[in-house]
Amino acid sequence: MPTRDVNEKIADMFDTIADVLELQGDIPYRIRAYRNAARTIRDLPQPIEEVAREGKLEDLPGIGKDLAAKILEYLETGRMSKYEEVVSQVPPGLIELLHIPGLGPKRVRLLHERLGISDLEDLRRALDSGRIETLPGMGKKTVENIRRGLALYEASKERMPLGRALPIAEEIARQIDALPGTARVVIAGSARRMKETVGDIDILTIAEDGEATIQAFVRFPQVRDILAAGDTKGSVVLHNGLQVDLRVVPPESYGAALHYFTGSKAHNIKIRTIAREQGLKVNEYGIFRGEERIGGEEEADVFRVLGMPWIPPEMREDRGEIEAALEGRLPTPVSLDDIRGDPHVHSKWSDGANTIRELAQAARARGYEYIAVTDHSPRVRVAGGMSVEKVWQRQKEIEALNREFDDFRILSGAEVDILPDGSLDYPDEVLAALDLVIVSVHSGFKMSREEMTRRILRALENPYVHILAHPTGRLIGQREPYPVDLEAVLRRAAELGVAVEINGYYLRLDLDDVNAHLAKELGCTISLGTDAHQVDHLSMMRYAVGVARRAWLEPQDVLNTKSLPDLLAWLQRRRSG
Image (cartoon, rainbow, N blue to C red; front, top):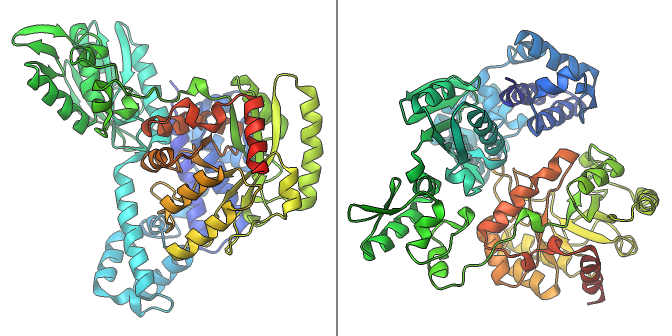
């Protein structure tokens, strides 16, 4: 059975080739080609073997004849000669150093050539000894940034981004569901709570033959190591290093077990404490009054017996959700079904992989009423930012496409760079002609907190701005947020009526849940956008919604739950002040 595990392997190979080429100072275009191909393959919703069987590898964004041949070589032989050739040229530990935030290829090369640093352990010793500070361009501040980057990298190795872990978990859950005699297969744990990173995967099922189910599970093709294989629990490590635990539970305990294994730990402790105060016991086996079982078959039983409504999994973090439920003030969080459109997508006019028509067709297929095509402004050269002339050319294409639709609208937008002084990367006459303007920071991350805050606040003052995108600039496991007084930014956005974004791309999820909750409390409108660079990325709206649910956002808090007429009215009100 094909699995997405192969996607990960090929994507990792292409990323590694790009790493080595970058270390060797190769042509930037070639490096980007491998990086883009890796991203395309990693984000594929189906196993790449299926794409290859259909003869459609070259239809994938960024996959030409040369890269398609390398993919086929791996699928047919289990090897990729280009990968083997490239990795043989450098010590393996040197490649890993490139993944540390704050260490680019030039610095890695300098560390290797001058200090003989070839792996993480060498780097730790050199940091502790103070030798790095003796190198040109490596002062105390730079060394401190490298220390923070090393800590961030090591922490990220212990957890996988949700957007990589959840599709893997769902694939395994489908395989379990296809086994004879299984029922009610469900993903639990932090993945069910939509946490931005996942340490391991918990899956529950009911099975007629627990031992046979576990034995089949531990022999799935994704499995590298078997940690446990009993009658009711199997635990494995996949080839990508992710641990997956499968528990077979009896029907009468299913709901209680699902609640228990969903967590969080803090939420469960408080639930058990309240139960004890009421003379009850709640655990993974059921709900008991003394020796009598009074519930546990359904998850809602846990909440019902304690006098509260069912609490959505994303909210179970002991952040007041239990008190809100007991007091009858638990919000009904926004759901994917509430979303009417995607206000942040990129087309071939900048760095997107698809035409505007293809994006519109994919959005219509999702039941949306609209999308906003928000290609980059000129400052982002690496993303092929649009010149002013191209903005007008693209406008004609959008107008022509809109004449073809009677049930869908393409909004003409742009993701406009906030320049270092807070001015914007297009003149006002261009901004005024756009339906929707997103502003964002893509450079100058090393500004002071005060400088960055002033920069963003000035951008928000522009009357043509509608949305502030990915407001902290962080990349999960790769880049820390830039220094900024976020509360001041959110307060001013609320005052001006500028929406702030939860970016659904799985390595961003920015704003995060804590800051999105703060934004709601401060009165901000929140925009949920995917930042899609290919049609498959539109599916990442579920991650933006997951963050929103963790932040307790309701449909009325979210910009793109509005119908098209209501959205257009909101956009116009922002500009009319």
